[in-house]
Image (cartoon, rainbow, N blue to C red):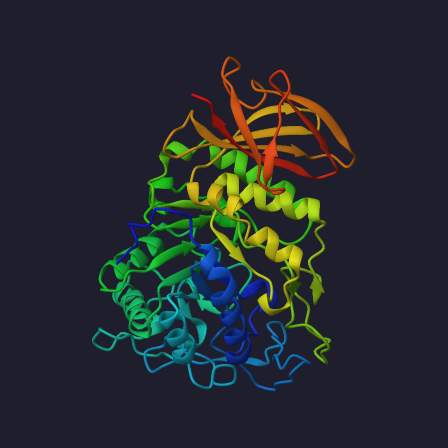
Length: 451
């Protein structure tokens, strides 16, 4: 069943930013132990294996981390399927399946998640795998052959024509498989542009006894032209509203754009549904590159290979303030065992997490040159408390006096302010908040009205 009882934005870890499609059992379990020790006590709940957990490299060449290289572009890859044309864990990377990982998650109170692509595997269609629950219908018979429907960035799957017999049964069988495995969270990729397939996934999830948190993701830009009502997406728990986000200033800027656009729709959201600003690319990233002989491979998503997050501390604070003040799901993408003190201090800051779990989308209130001010109201007392983000979106130092009116607060009232990142009270003088911000930094405060 769909998780319509969800009250706060999901928080967790996702393997994509550090492993792409190359994570294996060893690295998953190492990250899981750090997650259990450090992140679960702070409120992070979901542990998610992202794309290509079912891929088989035909000529495997491990790098120094023991990770097999992905070769999407040169055809040196195959997919592991069961008898019904459904993905199963790669024997190369998960020789014991997901059972050891799921067992460890559940015994520690962590919820396990998987990435899925919209549609049916191309291999299942090309080789005419039968569809479970039908009388002889095969995967090739449910494929949507419209070239405009095909995922623009991956050839893993074909979309499904939901008007064809066997189409719903295929989605039913996939979700049944996930529930039987013990999956608690699904990230469905390339699906935000297909209303029919989103509805099919909703129906399938509602047929199983297991509660599943559902994340919708987008990367086929032609889908953006399709006018699908927010009410359709809001039958899930979260939807991506950005492109893939990496450690670039331009991606901080595009996050601001997405935030401001979706803030206009905040009153249309049911309480279990959240706008997703994508993952958190902090720490050690893209280990699947490392030292590799796979020189023919180029990445269509992010031109850079293995590296440490490029963000400055100022950019990291701004990045997380955006997400907390928007009530966005928080999913760390870096390799957890390698985190440094700064990374952990930002991700585990309880005052930042409190704002995020407030689950309210903040709104822009003031814009003066490079000074941008946003306000997020308290969920239980809109006027009595909330959070203010005073952002320097410029490339140089910014000094300013910010009034209560600039912050969207009542000028005749008195307020106490608490600095989230420095974890200390902030004094005001004559109703003014003095700010001195380095380039791309933020003053992130919680306010409390004195009554």
